[in-house]
Image 1: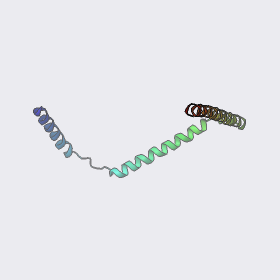
Image 2 (image 1 turned 120 degrees about the vertical axis):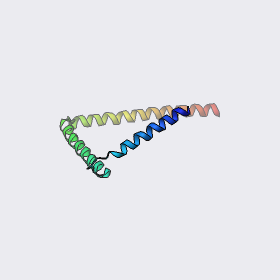
Image 3 (image 1 turned 60 degrees about the vertical axis):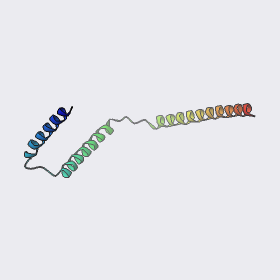
Length: 98
């Protein structure tokens, strides 16, 4: 086990020395390179969003109204149903306890 660890350390040390000798001549500072990449990605995203917005088929006013009414009706129905079940179960528990 100790031999394996020593061999790994030797490989890592040898690899690092060679890597440090080679440095590119003209490199932007890391901060500026990241900022440029970020801005390019943001602008690309905005362009793609504009293209996708042109492809959207928006619902008509009538369809939007009908869907809104359906959602509100369903929500009221479910809340009334759950309220009724809650009331019945609480009455049952009160009956069993008292």
